Length: 256
Image (cartoon, rainbow, N blue to C red; front, side):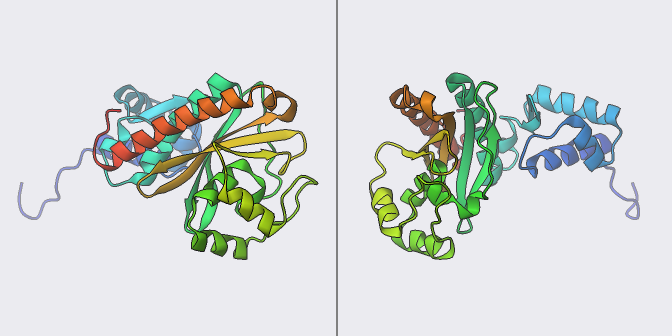
């Protein structure tokens, strides 16, 4: 090869990395057809490459599309967001299957409470998010769990930008009452029809270096009242395992 020649590049590897990057930057699972459209590759080529990536563990198949697989964090040890989404999706699937309830993963990022991923359960449909979570953390279990974890300055800043409003007759909209609850959240945060009539949501904390998050489920209120204790124990076990995975991944141990 002469100095003027360009370096030899392997196009199949370039295409594979492009597909992994598309999935890594998506906030929900992507069907192969959507990945093909975003990449500009043919559907057949996309199927072949993603099938290989799934086999090698860099992508994983979910009912609603492809997500990052367990092998992916090893490619980018410093990518906490990628690790969080990949590990979180596995945890959500496990919780939804075990409890038969829609599961939610949330995180405090750039001063806001955000839902990162949702896994639906057929027997317990998700709550319709009629008010954006950014403005309704005070009325949701997943939001209250995160607010309870914040330092007083962070919490005051959030509530100054998002004053608690009454979304239902059960919403705690009085700031002092809300702060009293956040100061003593107990084993889990619970909202009983505070965000949506007929639904109870339960959330526990996800704690790891650099992470303030919550793992939550939503249930019809009549069902939640019958097995709330067992639900909290299951959520705590799943959140603890996820927290360990995130901590291990941060320090380069990807085998948990």
